[in-house]
Every structure is written in C-alpha cells, then in structure tokens.
Image 1 (cartoon, rainbow, N blue to C red):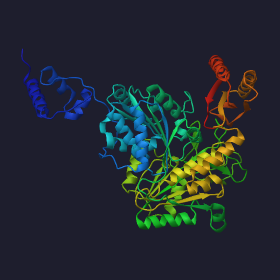
Image 2 (image 1 turned 90 degrees about the vertical axis):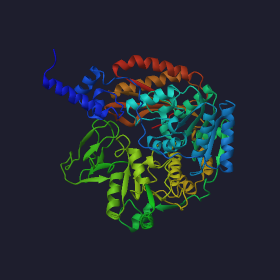
Image 3 (image 1 turned 90 degrees about the horizontal axis):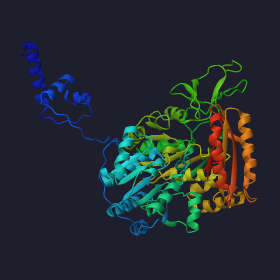
Image 4 (image 1 turned 120 degrees about the horizontal axis):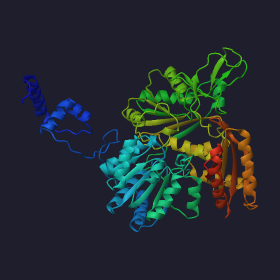
Length: 614
C-alpha cells in the first residue's frame, strides 16, 4: 500500500532539504544542535536517518574555554641574569632534582620569559609543566602568553570555567593531551602524571591560601609535588614573602636574581602625596592636585593610566548624622556597603541585601549620609572631573560574568579606555605598553588592620602596582596618596627597596615572636549560640595546656575580629610555637571530637600557618 500524494510530496521535500545540506559538513551534540546547524527540522532529520540518507555517529568534542585566539610568539633573547636563571632551572629539570628556586626579580625584569623557556625545556624532555597564578584576573594575559608559545598544548583551570569546561580540561590533562597547565590555586591538584617543572608566579600572594576547608596553601602543595615528582619548583616574585626570602637566606631555596628590567628601562618615578596637607588647601576629594594634573597630562598625550583603590562598591557605610546610627547586617557584626548599580545595601560576608534607606531606621531622620570611598564613587567623581576620559571599572561587581576579566582587559589593551580603575586585581601581572601613570588612591587601607602582615602586604601591593607603569619604551610615573607618608612600608615601596624592607620587617617579626621565626596555628570555634562557642573554646584551651610546652605562646581565647557572621558567633585561639612534638596529635584529636559535636551545630576549624590572625 503506497502513501497518499500529499505524504509522497512531503517525502520529496524532505529529501531535497537533506540533499541541499549534504555538501556542507557539520558537527552537533544533539538533534536540536543539528537542526540549528543545518536549518532542518527534527522530523526531517529523523526521516533522513530512517531512509538511510543520513547516519548518526558519536564523537567526543572538547569544550573550548578560551575566549579568543592568540598570536604565536617565539622565544626572546635572554639577558645574562635571565640566562643564568634558565640554565639553573633547566639543569634541575634534566637531573630530576626537586630543587626549590626563589626567582626574585624587579617588576618588568622578564620573569615570564624565564618561565616560558623553562617550560619549553621541560616539554623537550617529554614532560609536563604546571604554572600557578594567584588570581583569575591574571589568567587571561598569562594564558595568552603561554598559549602564544605552546598553542593547543595548554590547558587552563580556574573558577571562571563552567563545570563542563573544567571537566573537559581535567580530562585533557589526565590523558596527557595537555602538556602545560595554567591555573589559579586549585590547579595545584591537576592530574599531571609526568611533571617536569612547577612555577608559582607571584608566590607571595595571600590568595594562594585556601581560607575554608580544606585549608591549604598552594605553594606548600607545589613544594610537596616537586619532591614527589622529582622536579624543581620555581617561586617567582618581585616582593617575595618573608618566609620564602628567609628560607633562601638559609639556603633552603636557591635564590636567582633579576635586578634590572629586561628592556633596560628605568623603574618608574614614584612620588608620595600627603593627603592631610591636601585637605588643608582643597575640598575633600579622592584626587590630589598632583594626581589630577598627571591624569590630565596623560589624556593630552594619548597615554593610559591605572588607578587602584582597595575597596569595591560606592561607599563604605551609611550613617545617620542626627543619631549616629550605622546600618549593619542583621546576620553579621559588620556594616552594610552601598552599591549604586543595584541601588542596594549589601553584606560582603553573608550576601544579605536590602534597599538603600532614605530615612534613619532608628530616629526616622532624613539626614542619611554616605561615608567612605568605593570604586563606583571614584568612577562617578572621575566622570565629573574628567568628562572626556573613557573609564573602565574593574572590581568584583563588574567581573561577575564569565569572561568579564578578559573582555575588560582586552578593551583596555585596544585603547578603548584611557583609565583603568580597579581594586587589587589590577595591581599584579598586567602588562600594557601605553600605561605610563599609576595612581594609588588610598595606600593606608591595609596599614590600619590589626594584622602582623599589614606592613608586608602594603609594601608588596604598592611595589607591584607601581611596576605596571612604564613597562615599554615610555617612562613611567607613580603617585601614591596616603595619610601616613613617613611609614617605612610606604617609603621603602617608593624606593622599591625590598632588601631594606626585608631586614626591617624581619627585625620586627623577631621582636614580636611572629612568623617566620615561629610557626602558628589558629583554632576557630563557632555556634549559633554565643555561650556554646565561648564554653567550647575555653575547654579547648584547658585541653591544650596539658599538651603544650612552656615555650609555646597562646593568644586568646578572644571573640573573632568580626564576632558574628551569618548568624554564627566566632571565638578564636592562636598558638605560636617553634617545636611542639605533641601538638599535631592533640589537634587531630580535637578534629575527631569536633566531627561528633558538629551534629549539634558546633563547628571547630584548625588553620595551620594562617595568613592572618584576624
């Protein structure tokens, strides 16, 4: 029995439609995908398959996490210091020695080229390489340079990938198809079976430390993997952590120096502006006269500027001028931050969000004022003072979407903006030849924190961000605005004198019994009921006192720096020690007890060698 004329006509139409696309090959992961690729309906595809006109087969296709193509590059001519460093690292790779190297080079000294040439040697040996960078914001530029040298052999791992992209990259690495892995902190666990070299760029960065479970420092894991795989580990930085520099001093690490910029260009000229003096002569502003003059000069010359601020949002907090009420988070002991883009008040700890108040919730006054400075507020002031300037703002709020880091940096690199305004994420690793001015709007932010690393972090940040200026042929200038112009961290950062800073800071650490002279461990107890947390931490103190020697130093117990976060109360205890053979056993016992108590809501966290005691 034959079909009706209408059915026969439909069949001919479908056959002709299939025939029209047979000369055009396509790939698809589903029938819907095939329909989009060929403009055929699902029923036509099924009819073609049933009649033998089309066949369906499966093929694995990796998702591509890279946002754009790159230009192929070749190895550069090394200067003598770079060549010495490359030779030393390559020798360790060839001999399968797990030597830790501290590559200490001023900003712009060509550390990245040293990395690339040691990776090339590793690949020539038939081995794989791992390169860690501290933040996702650095990944696009670094990955671009590594891909430019090694092409499709490069895999990338960071939190900005989708789950599918991360899965595909993980498989490429595990199968040995990707021979170079570049990624942020968690990439240190990449399934590389034949490691020949591990590189930790900007090794001093605190972002290498995982602050919640599992608490680890990527640098420590990298050193362990170096020993396990019998390969060298290169720790690179212009401002090494005091721990790494001290280990190099004791010759536990082999120190390699790059004392000059690779292009022989001078380091930028740095000036420090005392903002207390500025306020005496001008109205309150985020910009000193010197910085505003320098910005106008760059605009006239068609050059670019970086402006760094250590905050995001519009203002730090909202306060009533009549009764002094500050709007705080209902879940945390912290003030809410104003965000003008969403017209909301946000908590940066638990994520609580509420509308901006127009009346004081306490006294109903309308005298609500916004205090402090954020990137949004600085951007608004920039548009007012320099209306002709094109500004790109780069902070957590503008980089939430996937690929946002790379998109913004690409726009800036293509001269679609005159000023890049951002938080700490713009301070490291960026390399733009037309950036001749760097402005630091508030150098004092970290100095005011009750943290033994406050001076170290300030010095590192100022030195790193200063290094973004004048990296090509044009001379660079840096303007640092501060209310503490005589502080040694700021003065030594102005001179980029790391060695003098190391000597002075180590002296202070020795007097205060702080790392690297002492090891440290921080215990944190939290519960929804404050009395439960307080009782638990005091019980832990009594338990540990029977284990610790008289030489151990115990700080606390005290409430956490922010006593309540997300409706939980926090208490902490810090132990500083040099040799405590029984301590790790006692801590392991505490963790075992904590697992049983966690069912009732009590949580105990142990952080070995914390980055901060806060």
